[in-house]
Image 1 (cartoon, one colour):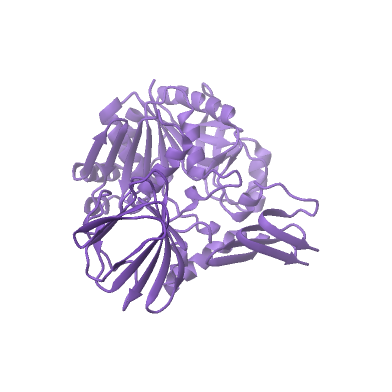
Image 2 (cartoon, helix red, strand yellow):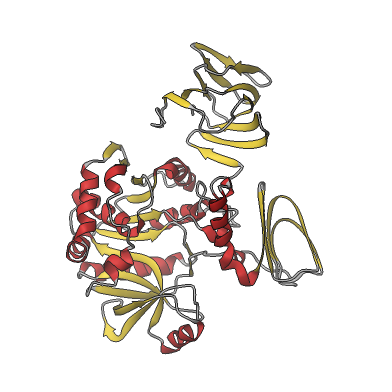
Length: 480
């Protein structure tokens, strides 16, 4: 039977600020081994048997970043497809949209394996075995969840209560889902033996899923179908992309797949498993990925310690020193630093809330910002100027654009640049420069086979990123 892993990549991960931000969310965070969570998820999905394609549901602004991660994963033979949301509308909308599209391509007997892009699974063989069990149950008409056998009484997860005497082929019938419990309740769940952590992963026969959605939340399914009728589909060899219509998508009910379906259906089963699962939901969970020294400290980057115990330190760009402190989380990025007690790791999200309320952009972007063509880093800025380091990938091109309020001076540091400036086209080599006056239509392209690196000095009355008019763009952003 055909299996289509559906990777859902939508959450921000506010408890992992300052590394996780809206334009660089949790799935793209690099782990100590250098791989991101979404790349690991993609590799894990691609290694399963009978995979027809891998479908990713994500925000349209993260499309090119996601493609880069998949490209670096090296699974070139995989068939890829994308559903691009204009904004988040919760998991019921994402799952229903994927089901409707895949049903039209593979039919009702094909199976969806729904995976979160920001979870870590350490035991691939055990995961593959659990998927096979889930597929057997899904073929019999069950909506299948993956229940993680609890290792301790965790209060930060929801739980699945299974009917202990209802043995199915490879799983158990689900009695109910329960919300995040108190510590005493969680201790009781662990002792009972028939409660499992709700992993948020599912396996469905597509026909069964659509039938149950029609039965329990027909408004979701109707709104999704209406959205897809108005959406734009583009197809190429081993690549399909559906760009959802924003006006219609706004009418899809904002509800999770758990509330919409899993808690209402009588056809829910779970596969209990030990797969080394973690949702990497806080800096405490991230710290566990780094070995501890004799004093219990876990450090990434250049760190010096004296009289410090049980701390987690992540410092990628400069030296961090801790003296005489215990049980701290210290995360240093170029434009923000987090210092928190380990017991308060879950409360980091409140800082993100304050940043949003105050209008501070540190919740939104890093100093280095990814773009379809590469990335830029803000090195310095003041009231009437901004200095950037720009990296353009080989064969990539910025849009043909114009700025009303600023001029730009480009100096090539390495590589080769093809420049269009008000109709004139010319090449710039290393150590050469050019000036783009305000109001000039211009474009920057890297025709070479190595990265183009240049320094851009902006000056003018206004140097905000929204001072841009695009006339032509290979990434479909013209007019934005």
